Image (cartoon, rainbow, N blue to C red; front, side, top):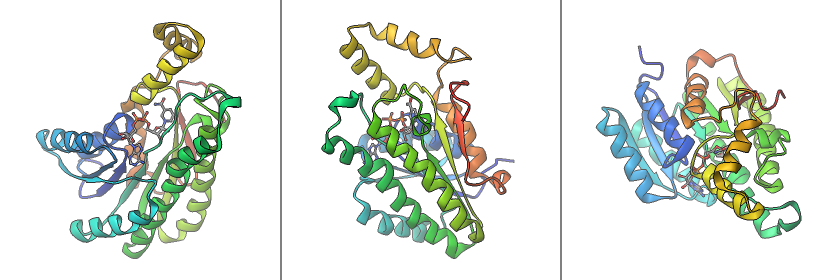
Length: 260
Ligand SMILES: NC(=O)c1ccc[n+]([C@@H]2O[C@H](COP(=O)([O-])OP(=O)(O)OC[C@H]3O[C@@H](n4cnc5c(N)ncnc54)[C@H](O)[C@@H]3O)[C@@H](O)[C@H]2O)c1
């Protein structure tokens, strides 16, 4: 039996990378997927691909940083689809920035989506889940949020630390409403974001992109960076009732890079 049969799952940043892999996995496990992304053509593509594989999917274009639009969007979707069982807060932005080069506007741009947008999405979804008796929230953080020094920049690491802290607070507050809240902390994961950071690192250090990628993998105990599907596998478990007594945790998927 599919593990998410009959569930409605909203995934932010579902147009590409990890979000897309989670949307596809959730659909394979029987969920009706709502793919939300700022990139219209990416949303259309993921929805079309899920439907072509026999799954059920709907798309919505939204900027997760425009927080005033999130509650109306989530309420409208729940009205149309009858419920919202799973929220995967995945959308985020970053780029490689040296410690001394981080400007206030970089900080604001990163935190606007990664921390502020994530919280207000979680708040709107939790309100609905509380009304209907429960749900699952999965926040995609990062091992950068636990201080992994290979982060793209310090402002990003701070935004992901905020996600881990908010996951614990939300789990505490929402537990009595039968809503569990967990974070996944990916390590190095081969997505567009990863290839962008590889390009920026290569430019900044004068190394070849292949050398930067080798250096990433050489530091990983299993000598293998993640595929997006490695994250999706855990997201399915945390979005399912199998995880009902697991809450407030932040789970590393990183090939053993850090132990925290
Ligand atoms: N790739 C990695 O190595 C890695 C490592 C640790 C954590 N993560 C985290 O995993 C998550 C997914 O990362 P990814 O590598 O798949 O990224 P990605 O850049 O490949 O995809 C991110 C998606 O989010 C969308 N998005 C960006 N800003 C948005 C906004 N304001 N509103 C709506 N959608 C928006 C993009 O259009 C894109 O489709 C992020 O939270 C990221 O911080 C990634």
